Image 1 (cartoon, protein in one colour):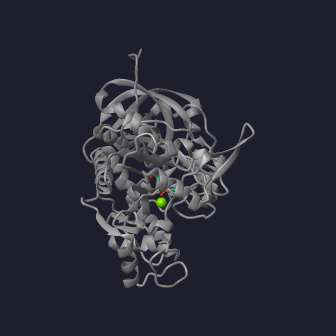
Image 2 (tube, rainbow, N blue to C red):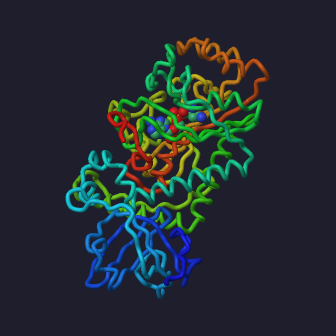
Length: 464
Ligand code: 4AD
Ligand code: MG
């Protein structure tokens, strides 16, 4: 009889060389030869080549094996010679196995439903199957590493995590993109940003952050807008605008360093970048893009380039990049997505775009004391994506905030708790929000942020 097998996960194979183990997973790849079956097993923690030989290949289960069948394999882990073509450099010499759940072959096989050339709608309808693939799962693993790294960086810098509500009765970023719903007969919204709530935590908990879903009823279909996205937001008290920029730069660089220094995650990022380059080539061949952009993520260098809105306007005009009306940019114009992307791609470096005109920005932003036309505001732009962060210093004067409500036609009543912040021991303070999916699109070279969400939502899609 065989020795008892220890149940392990694929990530732990290295520690079990020459040991008899049991590993459960799904058939990720399958190659059948005469009296040999090669299974690449996937268990979520990694991939492992498993070999069935002789008698084991003659059973009904072996002869009818399909991709995505769930299975438990028993056998000994062997180290492969250096340079062998198998993930992780190990293989499992199977001596016993049981099929747990068979998966259909033929037309119903996952590989036929979400074939690499399937149209995007089919892929998104079958996102629950697509995420089993190498590209989507690598992306989701990088995502998890980035979230973990953010928590670690915030912990390093002493910010405390809080969980603000998602169901609210105030807006933060303008009424146009609010999702409204019926809350026991009252009007309520899905939160656009947790910023206002984070501000109220400062006197209680000091500097705080949250990692929470935000919701935007975006009516435009773009490569970088979702209806629900993960928002990493922080708020800091007793700071200057310069402190805010330095903190943000530090947070981004620290977090990227944590991610980049994990060899497994770095390998995923590099594979995703290579895949992005292959996709870019296809887009070029199909004439969907005019030139080939090369993706190769590298951790950003400090300090980030700092550029005032007014300088950006001049830069865009010098480079012949027009505004949305096709005319030269003038002070006060919004910098539209296309222009912003062009500028970021040409400069090809992280940019802190600062000091946006008052009229372009949200009601709560503090004016620059030395230039009242503009606010102490910042967008962080990254190559390939453009804006991934929006932040600012906040209006901390009570009268000024009350005037801002009036000017913007915002009813002050529902904001009493936010207003009180200026009444009971106001302080200079500021913060920012990072769009996680946009940050990931930058790192992994994705064409759209939809690929950086587990189950993306945008106008027209709320399934699966
Ligand atoms: O620039 P935004 O609207 O700023 C705020 O919400 C501030 N209240 C944040 C704060 O200061 N605490 O959004 C911040 C970031 C954007 O830079 C972008 O990365 C992301 O959130 N974002 C979106 N990501 C995906 N889909 C959308 N529809 C997004 N809208 C904003
Ligand atoms: Mg913004």
